[in-house]
Image (tube, rainbow, N blue to C red):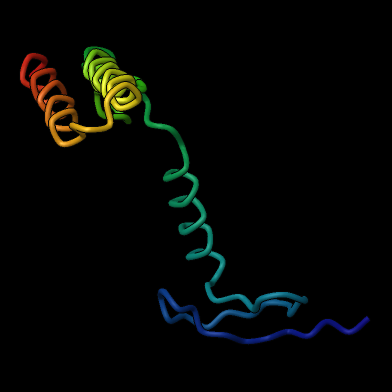
Length: 116
């Protein structure tokens, strides 16, 4: 088996170096620069060590209230109640639909004002 030696220039320091060509990506860095870059990458991947005396930042977990806006359950109940009253009155009296709708709307507005 013939080994193909390649001469290349390091992209960091510009120094010429030789290496054996293997399948995959060709080398871009000399052995010294490659070792320094690998060490820098490994250091970046290590978790930060908390030094004694350094305050620890507490992280609060998100709750459902952080994600969804607060909805007043009583308001929904009053709106549903006003709708039920309107539906019952419509079934009993078809002549004054405008007055019934106004009354139902007033009930919803009153509930919103009370709960705000």
